[in-house]
Image (cartoon, rainbow, N blue to C red; front, top):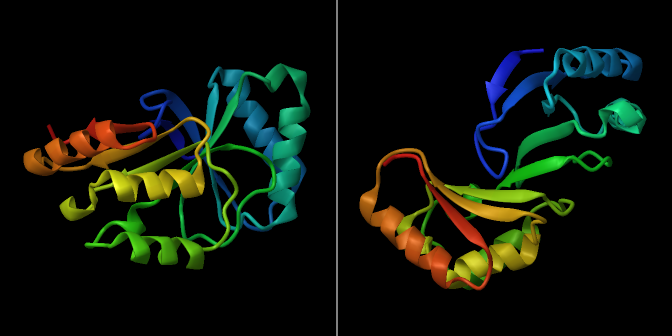
Length: 188
């Protein structure tokens, strides 16, 4: 375990979470023991980071942990980039970072093509767009991302440094887009 940290983004933002790195080659029972030790301390959110999500042991450990009725109130949270190749088979609270699509000026057609070329990802719980190029903060582009990835709980536009004009444009785009985008003004 790396320690207790606050969830950085999304609906669970600010909650304390035990950050756990899932090493490659670990045995499922060792991972379950680590999850359980953290859970017994009282932490209700486990922030999982896997070296290789395609390893069956990761899914096996998560399934074993989730099958215990006592752990039903524990959230297994992860934050991933949209271009990653492997995803866990077991459902987690996935926050997918789609920033790569809108970091430089983009047209709607180019965005649609880029999303078609991206690897398949399962339906995320939430998506986050960080520090987008100002010209990309339009309802059309935001709707395209939301329609394609269809997050279960929401989508967030986030800024990591003050950008008043861009933040204002993000608020307008989020309010006029068809989907449910929220804006986090971290820089303000």
